[in-house]
Each structure stands twice: as structure tokens, then as C-alpha cells.
Length: 421
Image (cartoon, rainbow, N blue to C red; front, side):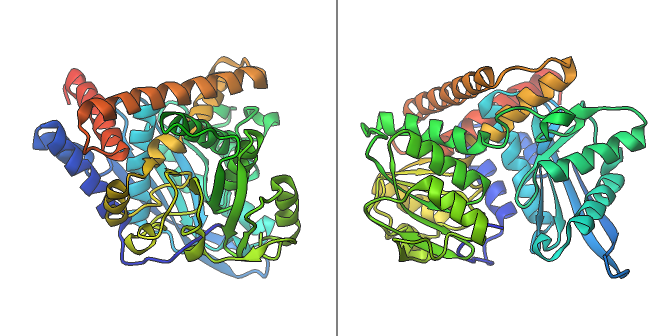
């Protein structure tokens, strides 16, 4: 699991609602739009009893938040994390609604979670829990209703167990009910790397408008799981120099650059980047203060606080994580002229390729990886161009995040009006 600087005082659901309220006010829309979007359509909370390997039965709490489906079925990942709660899941489902609206994929926002520590569970225990979660949630899922995917501490194998359980219950194969699956059960080539790859495309577009070439640009990352490692690899392939990386175990820094492929291999073998040869140790606080061009937070929420933002020297931040920057930090970064590519655009690659997977499942026709890559790049670039133009047309004082919420909410409000909501 990736983690970062703890800040338990910040409630992500409060943050999400404040973002909606602010955007509705800026757009001059009625309070009805805020009232409709401030809370999910449905929140399911369920007890998940799991028989552990020692015969003991433990009960975990599972969640599924379905925020808004005016543009299409609910869509969003399932995370396994020890401290996850209902408010976090609701906030993440809200951000997913806006992410899909910006990427212009026909989905609404959803999110799921189980409060557990997967690092302390065996593969069999994880399988039993994954299947029990689906059993509890099956009444609200479906390929045209709500489509889960991997998230923090879940992967293709977990999705395979879940889709198998769903199909067993329904007594027919419906692989489109879950995305992020292994290739043999309807998965999509390029899905595992999509979020990190998409992050690179969004940052590359941001660098272009800032007059910065990715070749030679210095980059630091907080978080080195699936998103962080694939983003680092993609940035490195563009010629960027990765000079610092942290994860849950520690951090490494080398101003001359870090070999990304060697670091990925080392991290897989040891479980952390900590102690990677040829580097100095660095912690989560100091990683953000490094003299660099680009920062990629790819861990969890609320990592860039006001205190952290004061020391940031980078000109671009690409949010690979969901909600990594607090509202107070956003204000400081605005005043410093930092271009923050917001999470609901920057990390939308996973949602976009999940859409491609869902389409392929529905048609039983699968595209080659080159086509997936081409379509992903096109979607990200179109979304960035639309959003950056919208930002520039709004006001000099509007940040890209504020514009992103305004853009998404305008799309949702128009759709709700057309549908008579």
C-alpha cells in the first residue's frame, strides 16, 4: 500500500462538497444543482464475514457509493485499506463522476471499498473476502448499472475473483460488469499501465503550455505503486530525469537521476524503494521541497498540505492520486503560479481504458494494444485542451482545478436538465 503524510483532520467528503458548492456559485447555477450533486444517489454499507485460514471468522465492513448516473452507468474502483470509511468512499465517487464527465466517457461516478489490511491477509483470505464483497453488492451491480474496477491494493486477480463470483451468481458470463480484469477473462491490453501512462500525457501537455520540454525535466514522485512506477517509466521514456521517489517504506534521492527500471525491479524484490543503491535517503516531507520541475503525487489523499505547499519549488504538479492536494495548499500553489493538473483529469487514464475494456466486452471484439494506446493519448490530449482552453477563457484567477469542476458540473447540469431531473 502507498501512503504519505498523515492528516486525519481533513475530511475528503467535506472537501468534495465544498468544491461542488464553489463551482456551482462560479457558474451561477441554482442551488438545485448543488443539492443534487452534493451527496451520492446511494451508499451501500455491508458486513463482510470472512473465514480466516485459522478457522476464525472476522467481519469486515464493505462499501459501495453510487454518486450520479445521468451520463451513464456508475463506474469506479474498489480499494482495500485499513482506515477507509464511508466519507472517503463518497468523496471518491463524486470525483469519479467529474472525471468521467471531463474525459467524456459515458459513465457516472462510483467507488467501493473494504476496510481491511490486505498486507496481513493470505491470498485465500483475500479471495474469500473478494467473493463475499460481491455477494453483498450484487443487487446494485451490473454491466449497465455499476461497473467496478481495481483501485488501491486491488489488482487484476482480485477483479477475476469478483467477476467469477458475479457470473456464478447470475449463472451466465457477463465480463463487462467489472474492468481491470486479466486478459483471459475479457481484460484489456494496456489497462494496468493506463493511469500512469495517461498521467504522463497530461503532464506533457501541461509542460508544453509552460514552455518546458519533458526531455531533461527533473521529476519527483510520492508513491511508487502501480500508478507511480508506470508514470515514472513513461516520464523516463520521454527523457525526463527522475531524481526522487518515496513510498510507504521510505524514500530515495539522487540529483543525477535514478534508473527507473532498476528501481522497479528493486522495489518488487524488497517491497519498497528504501535503500536503493546509489541514492540518499529522503522522507515524504522533504521530497516535495526538492528543486525540480515536476512533482507527481501518486499515493493517497491530502498529502500536499499548506505547510508542504509553502516549500514546493516545482512549476507543475500532476495529480496521479485522488485528492492529494488540500484546499489550503491549492490556494498557496495558485499564488505561487504552480500549474496543478487536477486529479480528475491527470489520473483519468484508468477510467478511459476501463471504458475501452467495457466496450470490447459488450461487443466481444478486442483491439490491439497500439489502438488502445492511440485512443488513450487522443482522449487525454482532447480533455486537456478542452479544459485548459476553458480555464483560460474563464478568468486569470481561476485555477485548472476550479475550471475542471465548473466544466464537469456544467455538463452534468445540462444533462440533468435535458433528462428532466
